Length: 175
Image (tube, rainbow, N blue to C red; front, side, top):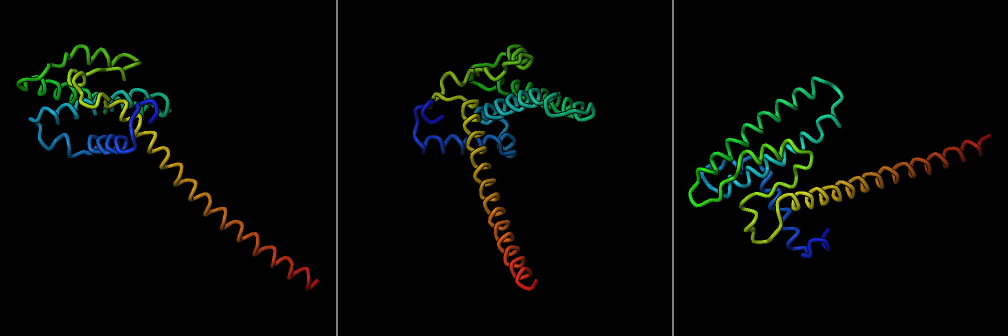
C-alpha cells in the first residue's frame, strides 16, 4: 500500500496515529464547536455507519442482534445529522449537503463520500484511505502476534513429545 500512495514510512505512521486519534472516544466530544473536531467526528460517524450496515447481515445470524445493530445505526445516523448541522452553522466553512450524505449512506458504495473539507486536504489523502491503511497495519500486527503464539505453542508441544519419547524409551528398556 505504501507504493500505491507514494509515501514514506514516517508518513504512514503519522496517518496511523491520525486514525487512532480520530477513533478515540474523547476526541469528538472534547470541543464540539471546533470545525476540525466536527469534521473528524462526521467522517468517523459516517464510516462507522457504513461499516455497521455492511456487516449487518454478514456477521449476525439472529434477528435480535440485527435489530440491536439497526438501532445503533439509527442512533449514529441521528448523531451524524446533528454533527453536520453543527458544522454547517460554523462560520467560514463549506456546508455539507445533508441530502447527499443520506443518499450516500443508502448506497452500497458509500465509502466514496467526498467531504467539502477534503478537497483542500493538505496531504491529499482522505480518511477512508488512511483507515484502510490502518486496518492493514492492524491485520499485520495481529498476524505477527498470532505467529508468535503459534511458535510458542509448537515449541511446547515439541518439548512434550521429546519428553514422551524419553519416557517411552525408559519403559521399553524395563520391558
